Length: 210
Image (cartoon, rainbow, N blue to C red; front, side, top):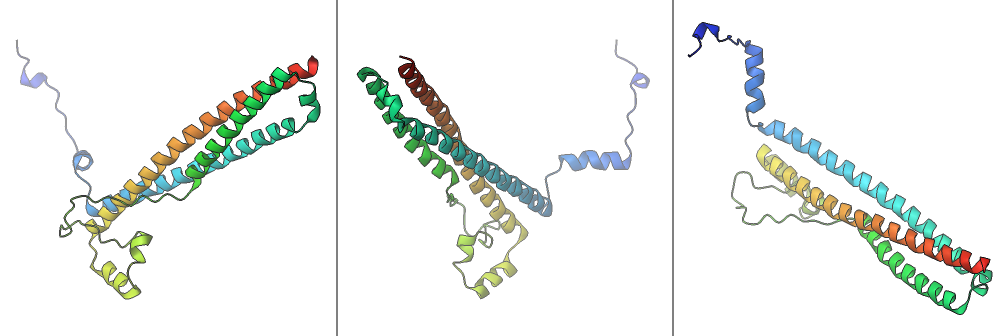
């Protein structure tokens, strides 16, 4: 049996509530996109700062581990207390450690070096209304003289500026993706180096006690 129409509760929305409901479902206008893109770019730069701090912290840990290995390897009494087979194992571990340390030092440099990710615009038609005017990115700015750069700013439209912001955000996200990948490998390398140092210390202690 179908319910009576009077039994269905009526939902009345005020004009303010209805406007808010409809406003949340509409596309952003040009200036809202501009502000949202700027916020996203600020977040991308914040992540770059976080990545740099994590890379510098990893370098500090790397330097501390290397200092421990150098101090232990230069103590002649440790090597003198070892048997020939133990010295062979120690030399092998030191060689492996050196290779691993150099490899992950390059990973740290890769994570910290300034990235260069020029966008690939593909088949974006240069005569389209939203084609970027290239007035923000420094490598594009220095290709013009001062007057032509100012003229470009006088002719740029909001959608062209938004497209350039979107391209800049895409490039920053690509840089962050590469940096995060390098950082993951770098911290994996620190764990490997810690295991190698533990094995070296075990050999030194075993040789000293025997």
